[in-house]
Image (cartoon, rainbow, N blue to C red; front, side):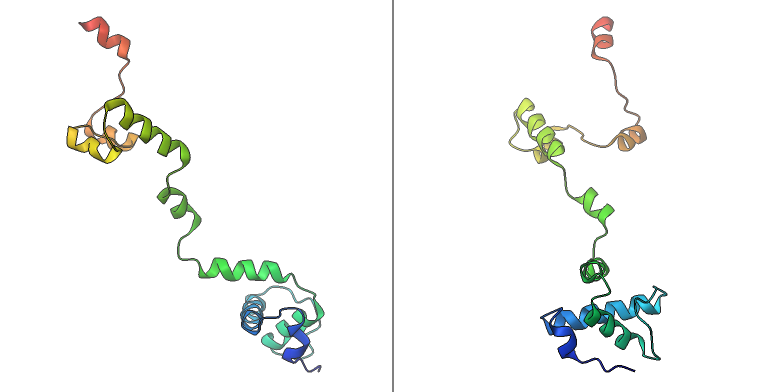
Length: 137
């Protein structure tokens, strides 16, 4: 059984805090069933993780990315829906300029409703062709 010290790994990951986080994440991955890249030699998972780091048999960048993902509070789907894209922002600006308002937030004050298709379906509103409105007059 080989002894692994911090000095063996500190050359690979200079920050001791990052080293501990990376080794702990790798040990958890081993516990979950990921394949080992070295012989276990009856060592426990944290020691195996440190030996893998020292021998450079694992992708440290990949493990660091998994650490970041595990610590994120928002998932990607929530993040995409919570931040408006550039096209939405431009459309809102154009709409407020067309009707002479300073911002899109003032539209409800004027009695206009802005919503998604699902909200409009629920209220009974539907899209109407402008040409059909001209024919009825």
